[in-house]
Image (tube, rainbow, N blue to C red; front, side, top):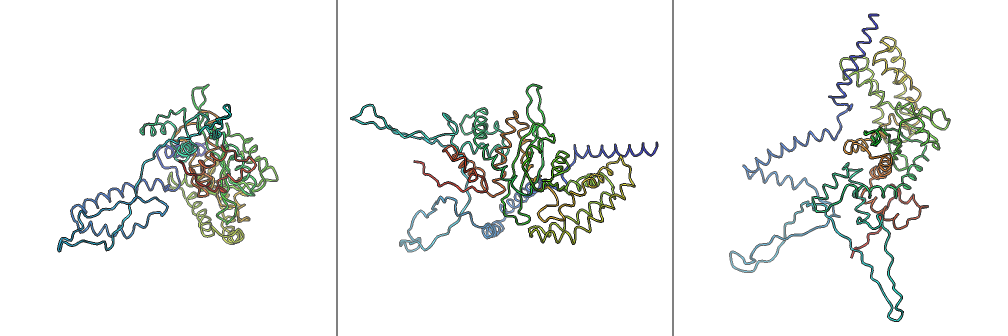
Length: 492
């Protein structure tokens, strides 16, 4: 009884430490690059202030620093427009002999200038023509189709709102405030109307994107919460955004990367079953039990994630002295070191390296974990961390036999980060329909980013093409990885 009480006491202490770390500490296993840059920004600003003070006091240092800056700054992109300004002398008369000076050369420098986002008005004129002989005949060019019939936005304006909301994480009410500072009064509800119409228009492309991803032989899957307003109860409910991603670049695959989000009102196992009912291949996932039903089908094999295994031991090691957890982290780190060395190689090379170097590590790790499990209290957090990989051992070892499989599912976890950022800024979606809009537009934006395509240019052009009557049978041409900009048309 005393031993059981002590074990329970230790378990509760560990839970309290986890809650304290969750509430007050850093949850990430590694320092995020963005957070690190925030700290560096302040240090660099202080350094620049010190240099400015030195330059003001010592002209020689200022000139030396300016020469160094000119040598290292590089050249500005050639596609940017150049606005030339000439700084000339007031008089071309020689100050010595009073003769006429002639140009012998010039010094040329370039600086980057920014013009804040500007609104403009596109005026469309459609002349009417009549026949003097036939008084009843009036001929006029048909009005072009618009995304918002009778509304004021161009397709580019709507694309700007979409990118600001779903890529730059600016809620519509903040965008409304930004536009108001430039004298343009656009109510939040007006912007919401534009977003809804655009989401409806883009839905077939989203569906086609997911179909193309499901045709792959290997996908990553993950899910993240999507708080949704629940008016009937006066609070929010927890919806889910399921993310299905493909990225074959680590092993040189030719299929372009992409991610599709699907909104669901809950996290029940029936959701991934419904989403992936036509999928055949390897699905790389975390430990969510909802994917287990897929594994019961012979067409789907589950590969599990070593990052989730590592995370549990990391939480224990961060909370205080934990020799078993620390040794487990060291063993897993050896696997990741091998992966970093073989990233980018062919599947055959990766498989060979894993069989020779990674398999011995994993073969030794399983009996070691079972031995340690027998020594600790079965109710402790350490026992839970050990049982987690042991209950998924076959799926955790699947990457050893297939060079296309990654060691973890970080590919899709990275794809859910923009969702989390948007969630922190917007707090919640207004309805289940808003969650579906979120999934549709975010899928296209994130896939465009994965393929190096500018989301704004892509959405503006694609919306314009669909409005103009792009054939539904040719949706593959509008997918982000197949996107080619339409020829620019001059605006008179």
